[in-house]
Length: 75
Picture (spheres, rainbow, N blue to C red):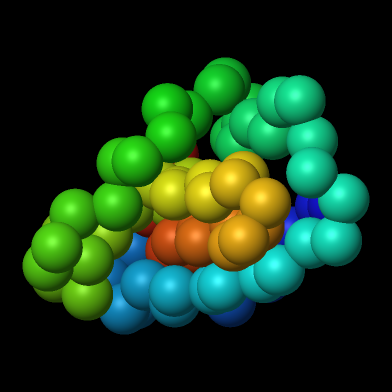
């Protein structure tokens, strides 16, 4: 899956927190922007300190969710 940021994003825009489910359990799920971003990097205060690409991947059988921060800082 690719997410492309609009050129209208500004560095001081608030981040957006996406949660997306997936059906098949995967051996590996990575977020790259273009370098790989470590899993479990979303801070508790993500609205103030969330940065583009921070993520939480829950790849267990019961959950299977990708949590992803999209933000104007475009690291």
